[in-house]
Image (cartoon, rainbow, N blue to C red; front, side, top):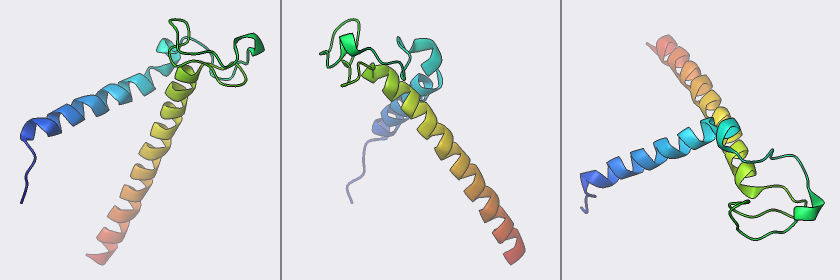
Length: 95
């Protein structure tokens, strides 16, 4: 069996923690509102102003990723909580 080195687990945990921190701090670190359109800035390339460029409506892609990640993270934690509660209830009834 090919076992991974233990440090790879720690690296992955640190990277996951960083992404979660980015998503939770989205309102503070996102440079633009993810829903505001700006037709003058549409389809811009990567720059210092727009870290990942803009889409066809001029919305900043980096801001949209941060806010989208925050929403996905909230949904995931809610599903984990609901599934855990249901599992504990069924396990308690089963004995």
